[in-house]
Length: 258
Image 1 (spheres, rainbow, N blue to C red):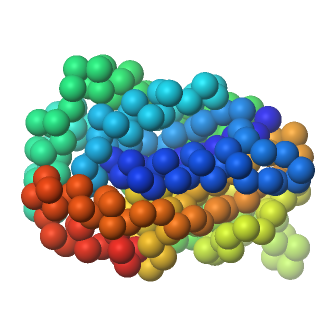
Image 2 (image 1 turned 60 degrees about the vertical axis):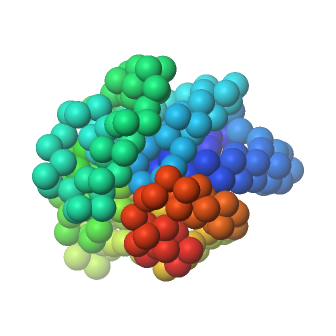
């Protein structure tokens, strides 16, 4: 099965459209397209097109697996937005005002608990705290390996592509956790005596100083994955944000990836 893994779209329709087009046309191992979409949450928030991004995902005929993110919950009033920074709070209120009845129903349907498919656990933030925890270093990653049973866990939330590996250290004979920023467009094997926490990065608001949209392709038959980065029309999204009078810092940051 070929799986398109998306996270943190954040109502950026131009980025989502480009990712879907790229994943559909990208020739990987002599095959194009994908069989399923796994969405790791935060479809809305920050960007100008919350309803349109939900509609665009629903328009895809591929099988869907999806979970809720913190901004999805915030838009439904399920989180105390006092914990958000001022710009994020403003965007939650703006998004709440813009969401139509169908989008609200869609967001309500998103599970907040980790979901399992084949060898993968799928969640937004972490298996330990699915809505909010940031897995940003090997200490936090190592602790989270104890909170899922599958070989692999897919997470988002940080907006940074990351790969954490838990394996036996042959020198110490103890389990060791390592982490790194994966290089785009290299095949990474899933075969081996290890467990992985995999973050595809953000479609709509990357934060690794690379403004290109980020996503992941999985091939479960070949047991391989590939991180992808693609350019999209950032100025189109920025123009829509200005028309909506969204915070200038949020408009600027998508051009720089911070």
